[in-house]
Image 1 (cartoon, protein in one colour):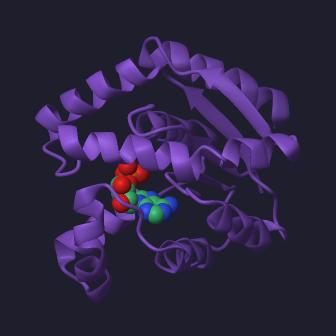
Image 2 (cartoon, rainbow, N blue to C red):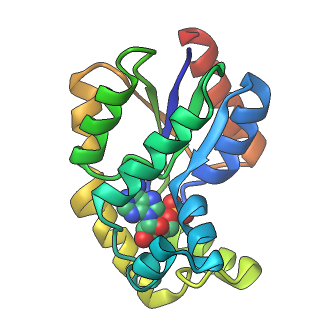
Amino acid sequence: MFNIIIFGPPGAGKGTQAQKISESYNLIHLSTGALLRKEVSKQTPIGRQVQTVMASGGLVSDNIVDEIIENEIKRNGQVAGFIFDGYPRTIHQAERLDIFLASTALPLVLNLEVGSEELITRLKLRGQESGRADDNEKTIANRLKIYTEQTQPLLNFYAEKKRLISVNGQGSIEEIYTRLQEQINNKK
Ligand code: AMP
């Protein structure tokens, strides 16, 4: 198995790049944000529980996202691997994922580096185009703050384990994808 975490702040392009990588390398794309949005739109018990915190840009509790991810991994059985997008976002989640995947392959972490001004521009544009409820100015600021406080520390966590590769996340989608492919092909 070959597993990847696509990492970076909100607006770094994780979803776009994860989709492309999943197609080329035949990996299952698991986006906790997309899975949670589906729960909200179906108004399941989980969806009702998480919708307020998602709309404010806060993090959903670790137990909920850990369970969603573990169920998806189990449900997908024999696959070439997974690409995780938007997960893990806390040290607790990262530890849990490592325990869960230890019997297969610990994921390689590809970190998309994008400057904060560029992130804000991209997120505002996405809000206009996709109408995502959490891509508005106030929520964007909160999501970036939460990223810095709770998610960014994962960079050290993975760097210490020698599993972190940072890639310039600015440029065209194809340019960024080529940079990611080079790193993946080196490690595969
Ligand atoms: P995303 O599509 O990855 O930007 O996620 C959208 C929202 O879903 C986030 O702002 C959080 O409210 C929630 N979410 C997604 N992934 C996670 C996670 N791993 N841990 C906690 N909350 C999450």
